[in-house]
Image (tube, rainbow, N blue to C red; front, side, top):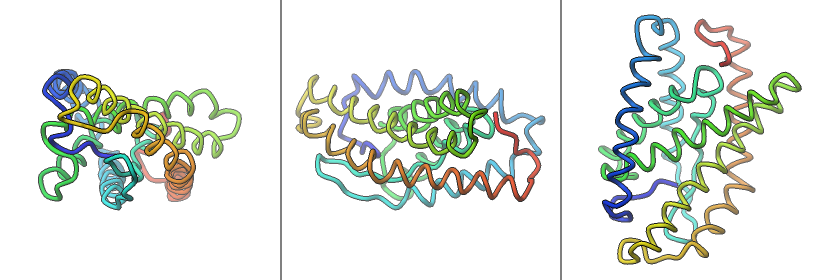
Length: 212
């Protein structure tokens, strides 16, 4: 799902950086001060786990790949901005040391996978949690995966419309190539992972774990 360097023009990457930078600052100040010290071990562990599962990439037609994200759980437990900042750190490390994604597209990838997806999942969680917590967690993660996938596909489609030299594949190809695996495979696995991880954390009764 990562957009690699070179696939997007500055017309898209620069605005994404302009939006992401102040959000990173706000998230860090609001959620990672002294008051958050008790929750940092859990946040760090879940971020590390998200890093691991995101390195397992499944190539799909249309010039991209699909994979789990794993940070919706952070949005459910803490706040979408926590998920956004943690996912941004994951993407930065992957770009610098593993060649996944890139620096110029960091803002785009972070907004899609770290903000759009977790916010969508968090809203579903808020709406359905009181009805059935596990079902709400599963649906939240599944919806988050679809939202992130659609965001990435939309950006690639927009780039093709703006300048096909950067990304020559049209949206008509990219959209089904990304959405179908997301709907049927990665979204389902993402939901199952989120339910399982939430259950384990609840049983462990770890400090700092309280659904947002």
